[in-house]
Image (tube, rainbow over all chains, first blue to last red; front, top):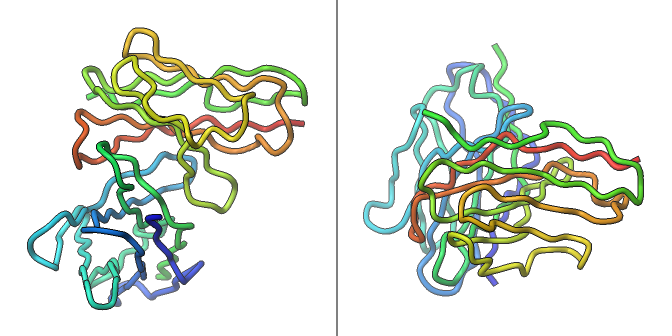
Length: 114
Length: 114
């Protein structure tokens, strides 16, 4: 079965420093991978996706993610963190089948300190 | 433009009561998903509609859960005889097609069963 793992419950980073939020996946076939962000009391917002092509994917708000097939990873990165980036981040993989059903990880809370 | 709208935002039910949660997807969106998000967890898939057809209900946790989308637009998730373990945020998402377009999420309904 398709699955993703987010090994860190929380990531702390100082404002202005680079940030990385980790995600590993387990799929059969080609992976379709996504990152979403959730602010308090809000639904999830799409950040970026990897379907095929370049391993480095650029998304919203300056975020990017690197697809690494050999390490089965899809880590989310940003060169310079902002306090406003503090939120819950979810990695997701598209399930097998003919529609866009997503399987989400447990989430990583990002805390950016001034 | 208008996003996915869910109502009510908060619902408190006594154990054993029936509840109905409403989702208004983005106009014209073919695909509609319901997810359940327990506290501190990632969203878990419940069910999927393509237009009015419920094509996947594999995530519904019991026969107390029922979803419908009779005219291919508004959807209702009904939970009968609520139990404490049903307490969660219920998220609705829609997307324009069956491909890899991002899911657009509503802000969710927080259900508390007392």
